[in-house]
Each structure stands twice: as C-alpha cells, then as structure tokens.
Length: 258
Image (cartoon, rainbow, N blue to C red; front, side, top):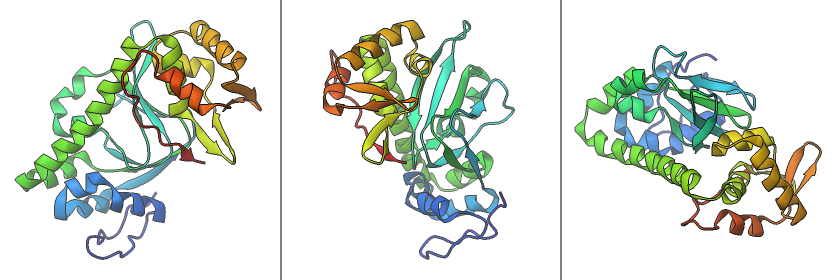
C-alpha cells in the first residue's frame, strides 16, 4: 500500500492520499492519536495499511527483528503466548481503535525477552502500521505526551490482566462461554462464532477434548447450535450467565457487525 503523501489532519478534515477512508477515520478518532499530541499526524508520513484474512499471523516475536506498532482499523485480532509444549493461551483481544505494540514502544529493551509472543487475525483485519522509532521521537519531544501514553498503556495492560486472571481462576465452562461471547459477530439477525473447538482451546489454554465436552453441554442446553460450519448463539443471556459463574465482572462485550 502506498504511504501517505501528506499528514494534514489536525484541525482540518483534509483527506490524506494513499489511505482508505476507514483507516483515516479510525486514526482520527483513536485515543492513541490524542495521546501523542499535536504532532501525531506526522506518523502518517511513512505509515502503511495492510489487510489480513481470518487466521493469518500478524506477527511472531520469535521471527521479528524489530518491534511492531499498529492500529486496528477493522476486525478482531488476538495476542497469544505459546508454551514450549506448543499449547497456546490468548492474553488479549484487540478490536477497532486498539493499538498493538504499545508496551514495546515504551520499553524497547524488552523486545528480546518475549519470543513466545505472537498475534493472529481472528476475523479478516485491516491494520494501520506506524513507525515505532518515529513515534518515540514524537512522544519524547514533549513531556506532556507521556502521561496520556502511559494511561493508554495502562488500559491495555488492565485488559491483559483481566483476561489472564479469568483464564486462571474461572472454571473451563465459564471460560469457554466468555470466549464464545468475545468472538461472536453479528451476521444479519444471528450472532455467530466461526472459531473451531481447537481455536477455543487455544484461547483458554486448554485442550480440544475438554472444550468439546463443554460445547456439547451448551448445545444440549440450547445456548448454541451448529449451523453451516459456525456456532450460532441462541441464548446470549444464558451464555453470559455461564461466563459469569464464580467470577468477578466480565469485561464488557461489544458485538462487532460483519
């Protein structure tokens, strides 16, 4: 994708050439842009847009030679860790307006210690890739930018902590129910989940056989059904109650239209 040829957005809705309208709109409304202050739009000078199909790897820290910084324009992605035995555990979901790579932007020395981390598009995704080096220059040029950036980082880390805590302390039934709600998309009048049982097992750090038993229970109880290769949520309220079993407040779920 061709880089933008100008970066004039602040105070003027002038369109930047080289970017789709949706990417510009999401960037202009993002809290990350606001956190960077008046010079934030300078990042667009060498930014680029990419599209990835569902299931495609976004990044793998074990294979990367430099940090990644990207704004999610559309779709749902997940960040996950892989154990030495090959089991996966999702540690964060990112959706429209979220930023991937902010911790490494502020602590680049940590790059070499997280080779087990990776990212994947759960649904078809669009990303606005930004330069970490240029972003650090903008952030460090004005001390007033740092507090908003740290607030942005704190919000993303609290989401990680919440997801990890629920995956550690909730029973498997509640964890599967919550991830079904997290991954649900609106398709016409239906709420559907395209993830497989193995995908759900990876998300909660379990194995497919355990998830399969829970799915059978949910189908028997009328909460979900299998149709045309996807799971259809038939009773979101009961599924939410199942997700809340023996847990604190569930992170607010916003169903994303398809």
